Length: 337
Image 1 (cartoon, rainbow, N blue to C red):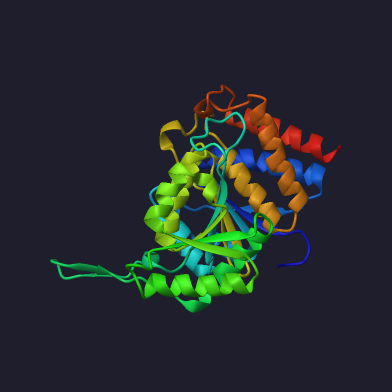
Image 2 (image 1 turned 180 degrees about the vertical axis):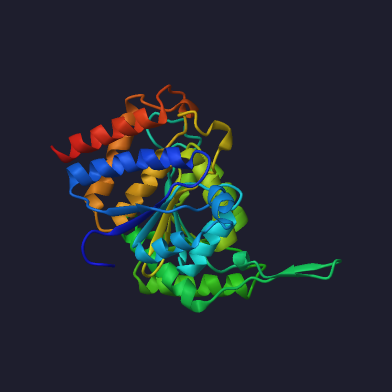
């Protein structure tokens, strides 16, 4: 990472993206002003709007900013999401996708007590997108490597050591004996070497257990496609994808983004829920080394929700920016104690 203030590329995205990006920026500015965090932020275009303006969803200027930045904070984009997110994941080797799911105060939680982190492999698996078809039969390749599984498991272990010290490996090695079998054996070997407790669950059973007994899980380590599905399920159980942040972690850079989409139907109305974007910004600060500021943002957000200050989708009546302003005020109050 560069010396001086960490460099952040903010991608406002499409639909409600610019609104939730501005809300997160309001909270980030409060963290910088009151909590000692210090970042240099530049903006870059990406997504549907960028494609219309520049002929491609990731323009050259944005790619230059990607190289400049230490971290990327990206709002949701529209139909070009695959062309933006997957390209950045592969280009920057963002091998791990981190998806926390936790009930928040004042929010209807479909699985009370859920508090877990899904660590998802992010650049391999069946999502490498290598497919073949002769018109009658189609085949997709699934790639799993020892190197990638080892570094993913080491990251899961680091996360677990700050929580319960337990990791559950989720796979389907009883059917996919070579690909899932390699992931299972390498992950288990690495986790045990890291000194954490290890158990394992087949992916279909994991989905059922998430619904029935979510407290069964703390840190879940899984493959790309399984993690994609299970993390959306966990996010919905915790109150909805509008509350779900995520991190894409690489060896050098990282990208942080809300899980939800661009929600074109409510764009420009000032009612979008920026919670996931704000929590993604908090995850970014934590990764950049500003752990105290990150914790204060999370604490401030929970205080505001507990006080009944909510956007319309959560049953409240405040606007996107009013909600962000209240969180920003609370961040400064907490940091000045």
